[in-house]
Amino acid sequence: MVFWKTRTAIEDAAPEDASAMAEIHDRSFARGWSAAEIEALLADYPRVQAIVMRRGPASRARMAGFAILRIAGGEAEILTIAVDPASRRKGFGRRLVDEAARRAYRERADALFLEVDESNRAAVSLYRKLGFETVGHRPHYYPHAGTAPEAALVMKLPLS
Image 1: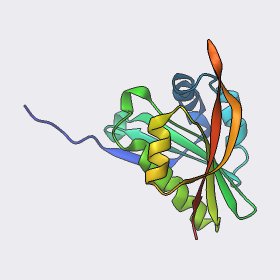
Image 2 (image 1 turned 135 degrees about the vertical axis):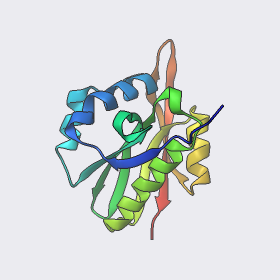
Image 3 (image 1 turned 90 degrees about the vertical axis):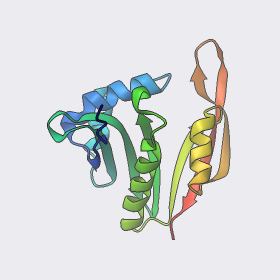
Image 4 (image 1 turned 180 degrees about the horizontal axis):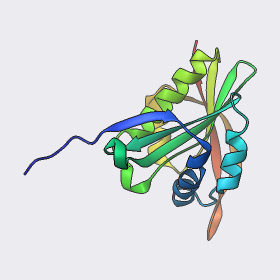
């Protein structure tokens, strides 16, 4: 039996990626974003930048995840980041955050911010390992079906 290492690549998102991004977002969050909402964000380039991770041979590469970030006024914020459930626990989220931080730094942002559901232990743990610190708390921010809304943690990664 031969095992081939799966090829991955991170590249700029294109408008035609919006549908696949919306599908991954919908599978990742209680309230997904539509392709139209994502297209509207992509239209705000260069202030809003989006990256996608593709996985597999170039001719059949599938989107494994993406991140959308906004850069303005010396700061950057990851507006959303999502990895397809079938591609989780492979380091793709880490690679997307690393690339988002590189892009924000290149655009001269001093810090990278994000919000995360405090009950999302895997994400919170990843962000802390990457150097993010909690700088804010928003109670009752994220809706959850059948339960009370969860708080959002506001996290910051210094880039300078």
